[in-house]
Length: 425
Image 1 (tube, rainbow, N blue to C red):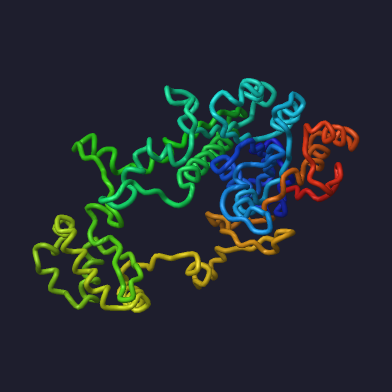
Image 2: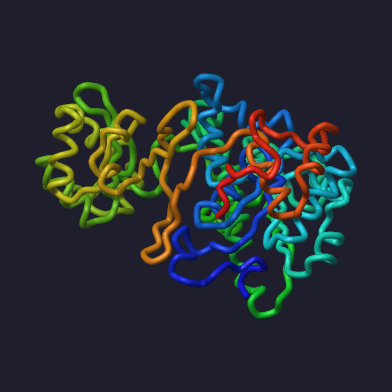
């Protein structure tokens, strides 16, 4: 069996994606762990997220409306939300019981924390030999930096990717999203699925060690051999892609920005023609890709002189007609009005009980036969506590009520013990 809790393998069981039947316990917080679990949930995994009564820090990140986290609506989607106090012995027992019934457990505590909670792989794996434990941390589970507090943008600094981000005449910039957390969560989900495939052959689980700095460092791929072989240290290049010219940001007549990529010989020929300057191919400074890379400033100046003569929409039209890769720099308003986003159904609107439809990114990648889907927006803290403990651990209404009264668990106000209302995959 691929999954410990495999459900009926009829066509109906695949309606929510290829991971239908997979049970995942999420112990993570903030971005990397929850994103890793969200990816699995999008493709049908039954993700049970365990969080404290005060809620995951991700609920306080980003914009809010009517007291609700808009970020949480998306990154917590498709999950059942259980609130258990892991600072109590009984709370840790409940979490351990849930983990022992799971296919995958995802955590992103500092290395050693899980062991101090009595939830280390030695304990969980002994009770559940097929368990896969995804461990996300700043610097990995071992090594001299392993006990440092890990934070995505700090680990970007260690990876080298921050050094090459931004304009050369300014300090290193950052992308205005939790990029390294997302990359690391993606690697964690990839590792989990590979481990599940391997488990089909051996029946054994394993640990997936996904480190923030390593995930970001892996994106430095072209610069690693360049340093080893040539001693070249990659630096910030602004909007350019070094040694690949023209490939940069240019300005339209009304001051909007458009990125044009025309470094290959055939594409540059088309660009020169649409610019009305086919003679550039006869100039030794621009005749070949290598020559253009040696004369980046001059090449970019010529392209920018031309783009400044036309409005943005006209630039897009003529470049598209000439098959030259180019695009305006989309903002969110552009995205919401774009026909391609609409045709591809890239924006979906699951319902939130307070906010109504909440727009978020659809599931990627697209699978032709067993695609993932957004089934519901992120639930509230403790919304599914009673239902999960009743359904998965067999606790009675009285036991659940006593746990809630002892503040070992938190039940969302209005939720009844063992009540319907959890959205079980």
